[in-house]
Amino acid sequence: MGIRDFFKKDKPKQPEPITDITLSTMKKGYLVDYDLKTWEVTAANYYTWGDENDISHEWQLTSADEIVYLEKEIDDEVAWNKSRKIAFSSLSESVKEFLLKTGDPPNKIVLNGVTYHQEEMAGGHFFKNGQGPGQQMISWSYEDDDGRGYLVIEQWGETSFEASLGEPVEEYEFSNILPNI
Image (tube, rainbow, N blue to C red; front, side):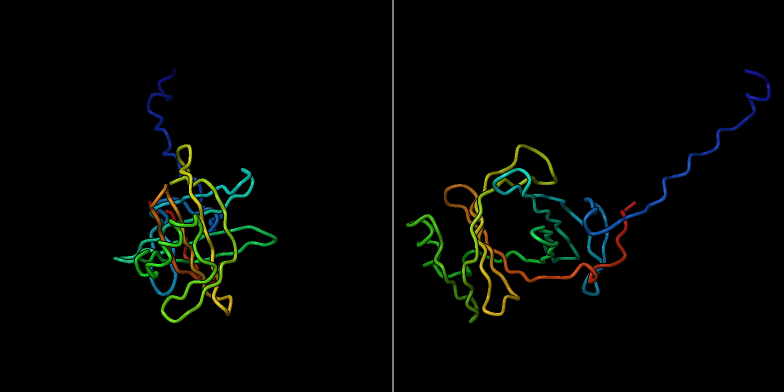
């Protein structure tokens, strides 16, 4: 090492430029604008359904005191859905009774004057923030008559149930995706 090397200062490393940020590449801590609000990604989860290649991704988005879930499914094409959890008790008591008695919910559920028809049932594993061995669960999906709204019932264990209401959304409705640095 020469005398000149001693006085040379190391140039500070420049951060890598942020490129190719999309809804699909969001991670926990990212920010995204949707519906005139800024949302923080507070979880980036995924589900495996049946075979390990059938995967759906879910981002928990939090804005002030509101939480929504953004889900990406790939069937023949990419589909985006937004949902909110609802109290399972908001479904009629007969839904839980039917579930516990038969192992399946009814084929038709009426909630707030809207009729939802069962479309599919799937068993899978849930990976919170992509971690762990995955929690086993069963999901039943319902659609309204117009095909624009849906209801999902999830079973976690023997008697633990959750419900959510949702609707399809388009990727272009989300903007300004940024890592929360």
